[in-house]
Amino acid sequence: MSLKNTATSYGAIAKFFHWTVALAVIALLIVGFIMGTIQDKTLKLQVYNLHKLIGLTVLLLMLLRLVWRFMNVQPGYPAAVPRWERKAARGVHDLLYLALILMPLSGWIMSTAVGHPPQLGSWLIAVPGIEINKTIANFFNTLHSILAWIIPGIIIIHLAAAIKHHWFDKNEVLIRMLPWVKNPAEDRG
Ligand code: HEM
Ligand code: HEM
Image (cartoon, rainbow, N blue to C red; front, side):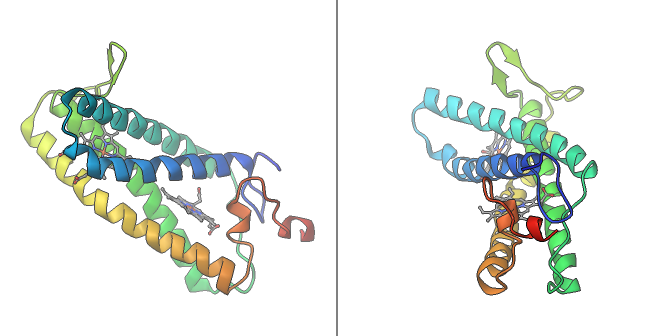
């Protein structure tokens, strides 16, 4: 499998970004909603910090992924896919990129502004230029909470589309994003 995308398939690097970010985001959503209920104080602090560190990793991966996306062709769709569906897919993917950059960024700014940035050993990873400030913390906290509901909504639409392509339209749109699976369209050129 090539590292770069081709006209018909995603390459290994795009697949790596897709599946590591997908897994991390689903885990962060679940942990995000339950971590507030943890009773043990030490464990609670550790889980919050882990949430922050994994969230920051998602931010880094998404920025690298954005650069990679611009350096690559985006695989085209099978001829039978109508124009509106191509546009909808493009729109949903762009929204996911935007939300998956805003989500960790809002969390990072909120926790820096409240005085609890992510911590790696003795290194406090604060957003440069952000001081402790309640108004800023509240604003980004609200944004983080709103996105916490919007992102699962977009993911459900995205999943429904992948299922439709695979089981109803029976095309290779899902196959070409799967790891370790060769897209049959590659051979047809
Ligand atoms: C894609 C990345 C991320 C996802 C999907 C995510 C998801 C979530 C979710 C679902 C919640 C619960 C929201 C609610 O109860 O209203 C939450 C809360 C929280 N997140 Fe994130 N998060 C991400 C990144 C980050 C980052 C990078 C930080 C900090 C550096 C962070 C810090 C927090 C904090 C402190 C809370 C608790 C807020 C509160 O209790 O008011 N998150 N996150
Ligand atoms: C768990 C089940 C998932 C499946 C089966 C799936 C499937 C796919 C498929 C088939 C594509 C290619 C679509 C096309 O070429 O039009 C794609 C692209 C994409 N998916 Fe998913 N996906 C899943 C989860 C996720 C999650 C959780 C996220 C976000 C956190 C996500 C974000 C994206 C993005 C941003 C693209 C655009 C491709 C790019 O430019 O990198 N996916 N996905």
